[in-house]
Image (cartoon, rainbow, N blue to C red; front, side, top):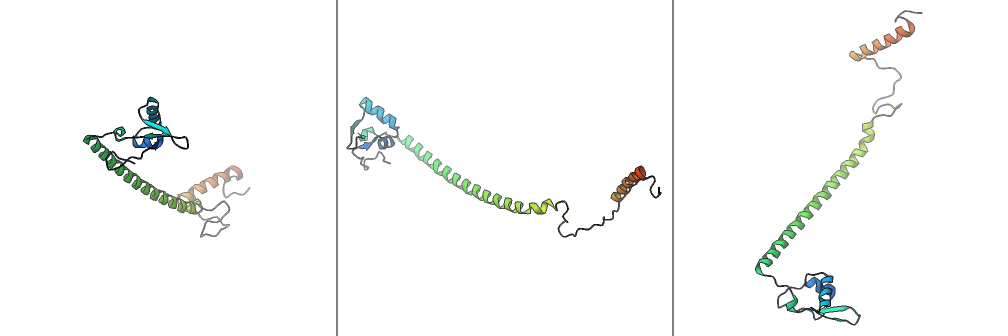
Length: 159
């Protein structure tokens, strides 16, 4: 990029794109200047339009504008650093998330427990019902007793 200081010499003829960049304009703006006769132009050997820019064509910034440009550049650098830090942090978070998900996916079979007909891990399958005690035993005795009375008469009586 060229600046508007006198020690940087401008090239003699520039493409419309390069001239737009130097003058901080769009290519369409440069073409409008060409149409109006405000900027010197010609066709090069390949038939492309080239323009001639002089020092007078360059925008002149006063001290206040230069300070503003410096402040804005400083803010852009700060935001670029902040964005890079956030990207780095986000990448680390994604890696931790992926690791945790992989570990949890490996544990799903352990969490689900045994399937129907399978013995729980660490226990052998038994055909004998386990003896119940406490409130659960009382409940099951009552249910079984009611079932017996309904279908077979009173418990303990033979038909």
